[in-house]
Length: 154
Image 1 (cartoon, helix red, strand yellow):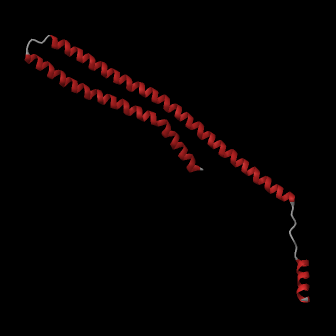
Image 2: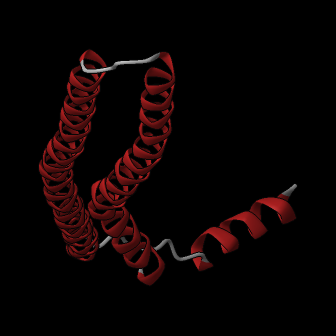
Image 3: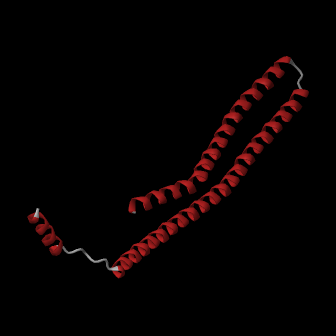
């Protein structure tokens, strides 16, 4: 046992325990904290910028939707007005009918003209609606594409 006790004493004497330097630990902790604060500021700045961009895109989209809705409404009102005027004109023409053949001729012409007018009105409204959909979606699409480019860069 004396050999073991001697070796233990020698080993203990030869082993050096590292000393704890509080100033180095404090410096490392400070650097870590400063880096964390800086990263948090950068993340907040990016988040704030993204939120502002999104808000602007939403405002622009709503304004465009309002304008586009007005355009579609005006086109629909114009179509209804044209249909009403055509209906009243046809009614006046029917009041002056002298024969059944004249009635059939007027009615056929009115129906043909009504179908042609309806097709044209549908094309006009479709064009306005398509344009409106493109204009309304453009600000959000642009904001989304910008955000995707920023994510790819980061």
